[in-house]
Each structure stands twice: as C-alpha cells, then as structure tokens.
Length: 220
Image 1 (cartoon, rainbow, N blue to C red):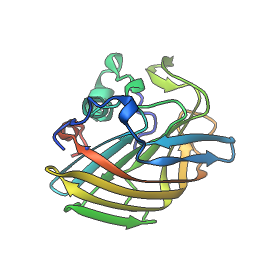
Image 2: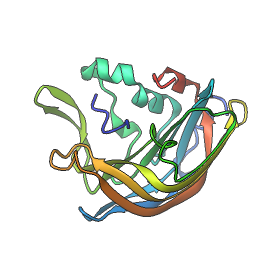
Image 3: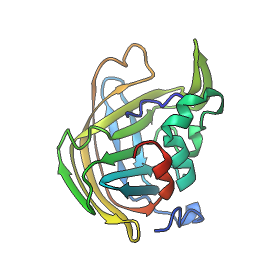
Image 4: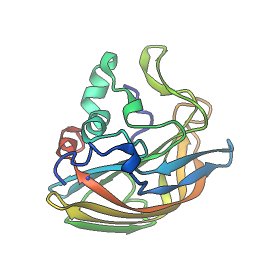
C-alpha cells in the first residue's frame, strides 16, 4: 500500500463504542500552505498510544470512526508493503481536508517534553490531505494503492511543544501546541522533492487510549 508519506487511549480500544455525537475534539486548529493556498483542519477525536522498553508510539486521528484496530492495521508496515492487493483502506482512519498526527519517540520513561526539537520529531509525521479530494484505489504504472485525489501534505512541526506522560494502566496524556511546519507534497511529482512551509495554530490536551495492537505495527 502507498503509505502516503508516512516516514513519515485505558485497556486496548476502551471507548471505541462511544457515539460520534458524544465525542469532543481534543486537538484543534488548522494549517495553511501558502504556495498552493490550501489548508486542512485538526479535529483530534481519537488517540491511541503504546510504549514498550523506551519506545513510545501515538496516533491522533481526526476521524471519529477510527479505533485501535484500524489505526494499528493502517500503520502496519510489513502488511501494507507486502501485499498491495489487500492494502488497507485509509478512509477508516483519515478524512479529506483533515490532519492526523503520528508520534514516535525513543527514551520514553513515563514522560517526555520537547520544544522546537528537530531530533524529537524526526520519526514523527503529520498527515494532511489538503483541499477537496477523496481516497481512491489507483494504479500508477507498476504501483497500486490508495491515493488522495487532492494535495497530500506530509510534514513535521518546527515550532511546537509536546508534553507527554502516562502508562499502560492509566492511559496517556499529550499536551500539544504547534504553529509552524516543514513538509512536502508526497503525491505530487512536481512538488515531492521540494520543501514547503505551513503555518497555523494547533493545540489541545489529548487523552489517548492504551492500544496494545500498536506493538504489532513494526515500529517497536
């Protein structure tokens, strides 16, 4: 499956049965890319996290239908590169014109704080299908998979603070503030090799469910 630029919460999936109407967005804001004059929103309705032996993984989805299983399957590197025919449908995790945030950290021991640290964000990624479009199964030469028909922006925060804490038993809390970003348009052949800045205030306190299935994604 095309990874769409991806380098780029108490018992597993507890709370997945919540109805959309009862959810409140935890991570909110929008980002804007000036060159293409397009933007995308953050509505972090669902967040899932797991840590093991110092490695911490979290995924914050703007899709209220996302759950532990769908996010873990979406992130599963081996499964999604080995069998293109069964590539995961990103519509279960992503939404057109909305951003999701993937965070991977090393040396996590129950807490982590970073501010404008490029090293801390090196393995993390912000996925933003910008502008009108849809996720469609597409054949491109010898490659096939789900592609976004609009602009697909993938980047990392440049100006930000992350304050993360928690455990398997208690779940995880992520205090996030972000305002500037570096990235590119990974599905645009004319733009994929260039770096593009984006701006926009995004912030919130995110409560993440412990998702044990993240251990199967290949990132640990």
